[in-house]
Image 1: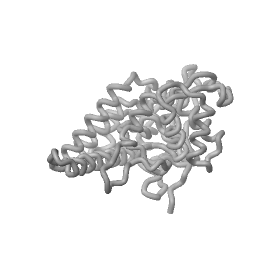
Image 2 (image 1 turned 60 degrees about the horizontal axis):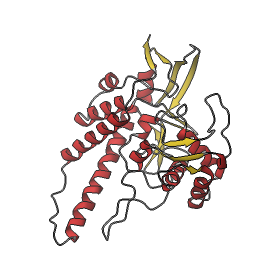
Image 3 (image 1 turned 90 degrees about the vertical axis):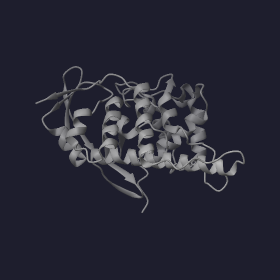
Image 4 (image 1 turned 135 degrees about the horizontal axis):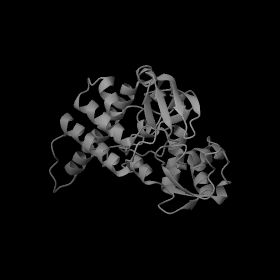
Length: 302
């Protein structure tokens, strides 16, 4: 059974469409590039994605009102928070942002002979970087809606779960009290946040800056290992940790294999589980230090 193309993978937090779009943006280099050229590059990689879908994905990843930590830097009319449509792709420019670089890091790392490189230029290959995309930026897809969170709070929750794999939801809620939405506002919490995190689905009452209340329905549906299902918050955190462990184990293997093939190097001993966990904590701590900011959404108990 193949996972749904429209759902994010719980490990890197991206859909297949977003991976293709981001890969094309990153391939265009560090300078602003006409978006129509980027879209054409993406379409040549995966022709079953329509160009308007690819452009829409790029725009969504660039706009600060639709994503908590934008992955794409854009120039030109990319739409507005009021719902105005973006200009046509020949009239806008984009480049990969710093957050995207943290997500794509290691994707093109060279591999010694006999080991398959991480990057096979396919949408199915998970992005290996340490930025916790699903936890920090959330996701909007057919049948799925993850809320975004503050990256500093996410880093604290991840570290707590590494230090104590049996850490309860109460422990995590003390560090990560609730969603932190791009639009700010406030969430009136009458226990709904806990229910959402426990069940992986639920409704939150959100007040915007003008005080108008709306209900937001969230469903933590995602794909993993060929299966689509609903996750709890703790399961999403654990999936991120396990993904980073696998990436670091692979990096360690590649470095030791390269040393074996080099005549003047002696390979190091394999990293222990404790050493790998220490690296995971250090890396996400650096990500939080680099991209961290103040919480935008207040949590109001009731």
